[in-house]
Length: 232
Image (tube, rainbow, N blue to C red):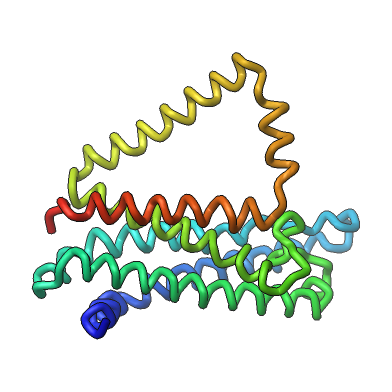
């Protein structure tokens, strides 16, 4: 375990990118939304002050872990770190980071509620379809998507290390093609109303914690199997 922790410390050498960048982007998005909604708050309809800019931290985290895999992986293997140890350390870092960010988001939600939506009924952290009255469930709703997005970034980075740019292009085009085929199939079979009802019937816990957790575990497993043959 000490060796895993040492590799975690190696990855934290790039802490401003891995830890700081997602927080910086979130802070910029938050400040920008405060300014924009502050300008229009007098004319906005009641209950309309809602923004989805909270997604900025999740997307930035995905990008940060792509960089981790493409830069730190090579450096770590140069220090005789095994692929298994590197992946274990990456997973530890991802879990710790997700928990930390999840706690921060929950505390910001409490502050948002205490201040009446920052004095203007703005819902930045308390996006209505993500809100749950149970503190533990709310924490999971914030935290689990961090795991999912992180392992997406890690997997894209692993694909790059193993197959290079052609592999990333193939992954991107293949994912897009599958999505397009599913869209065409759903349109042809008139499944869209059923798809809409399925998502409408799901609880926030299922949408933001249950399914993302399953997908994160699958991605983590596939990522480990792929990493075993990746070159530095």
